[in-house]
Image (cartoon, rainbow, N blue to C red; front, side):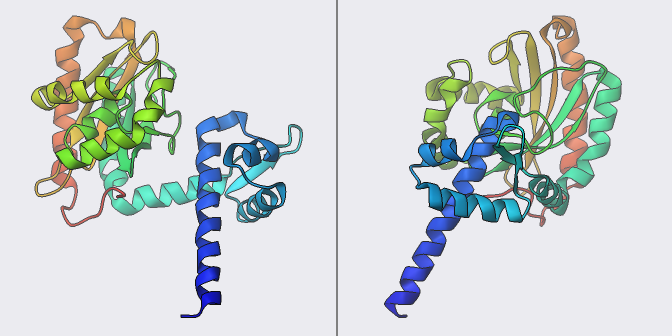
Length: 267
């Protein structure tokens, strides 16, 4: 292979890495969006390079610019791709009836979460009777693995070597979530494995509580988690056992219905 070919491939890889970095940045800031100058400064890029990458992403609908503010946000084409990815695994289709049942029975909001690399992604959600805020927001939202019960329920049941690698990679990302630390996440995992579920009461978001259980398939890694989010006032001690029974029933049904040969999560 000639030097020119190697140089060209190197440049192509670099542009791809920068494009993904921009998409991740815009995903982190959400609706607020970013100006091109903000992106260039954060990634230490020149304005011409930033403009070239942004123009390509915008042309493909992966990002969009609001004319009034001149800020860029993730585009709807990404949502469409995310929906296709979720449906392609089979997990969303199998689990959706469970979300409907849980939301109807509990009146709370139910989330289906799956792992994507070092993150946990909301694959599906069903709104209950009570509108509440959540860390992931709508379908497609993501948080670092280890943040919140839904992602901890997945993390706790991965292989120890994977857990350590994820905790190390995400350690610098944790503190923005109400001072969460790597050690705090690590110390919570053994109890989650022992109980079979994860719980958060006011730790990450004041006034919000959540329960989550892993979705496990025989012969497979944990493929996701099912979570119920609610106001903390609704998570009374005498209600906890009933919610756990509902969750346990549904994750067992989902785990039994997922094809063990399907690839359900991204690595």
